[in-house]
Image (tube, rainbow, N blue to C red; front, side, top):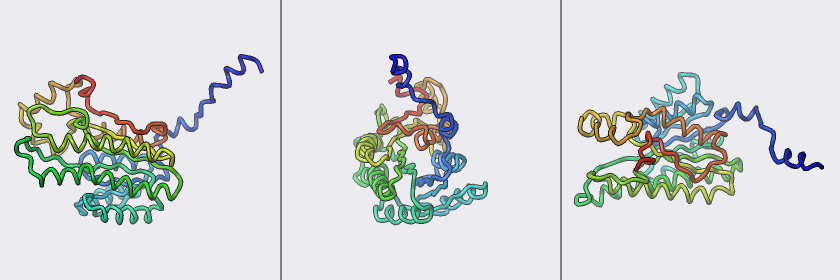
Length: 275
């Protein structure tokens, strides 16, 4: 064989069919705990619109059911579930129910998370424990329960956890001890999960937004001083939209993200790049 042929053989043929389906989730089943908040809702709709069956779960069963009904009414397949992700037995029961209904769970998108601001001198044990259980402990056991289902099926899978820029950056002048520590812990948790699940063809990644338009932060953004503070430190100079968070999530759970694991994508207008 000639030297030219040897060199040519090192380059694989481009799979055009695969390129055309990089974001196609047809036939996949997605479990989205915390899926009816602003970002979670955008993620659920995006998953469904790219072909996935979607299970929405959260502590407000009425909200989960309403979103599932809206998605189903648009011609997609979805179901709502009651889930308190702070309770490990509830996680296991719900994961089993979703897997039974959809024939397995291919995708986990963990949108569970809360923030309660208290300065370091005022943080209570109750608040810290609640945020730990909601933001970090739940992620551990959601990942575990879904991974058990995926390993048993032997078809690999995708996990994506919603973090925050606060997984990397502290915030001056605000009481973010519990929030930053739990989100930082989640960053390392997903990296470790990625390493342990890689042999099973399961990828684990994170998407970390900064402030995104939602009912939860709207009251804060209506305060000129706070809004100016946020906008002045953001290189793109604006507040993000939930759709802009859903995009990277889809990329990570679809074939487009098949060679990424243990990574965090910061959706922040350039905040973490500039600090």
